[in-house]
Length: 96
Image (cartoon, rainbow, N blue to C red):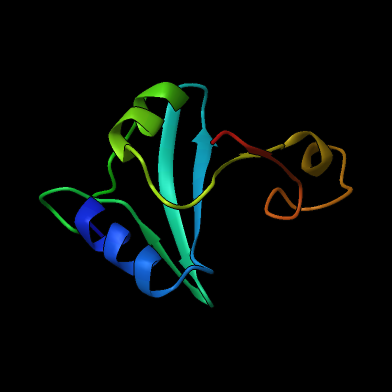
């Protein structure tokens, strides 16, 4: 999903969520959730998500969206000791 499509989607569906998913230190992907469907923000090639190297780079690129942006950071520590899977263990913080 491209940025222009994301802005149109947010106008039509205000319940759309926008998350920055933190991966491996300095890799952030923008994940859009509409109902049960999830998409990643892309540019030219729709099969490759845009990789941001900081939160500020992502928020600068997203500009003035009409939607809050949440940072999602998964934790592998609970999975390493056998408590939960990494998908169930994450922290969320609104960054804008």
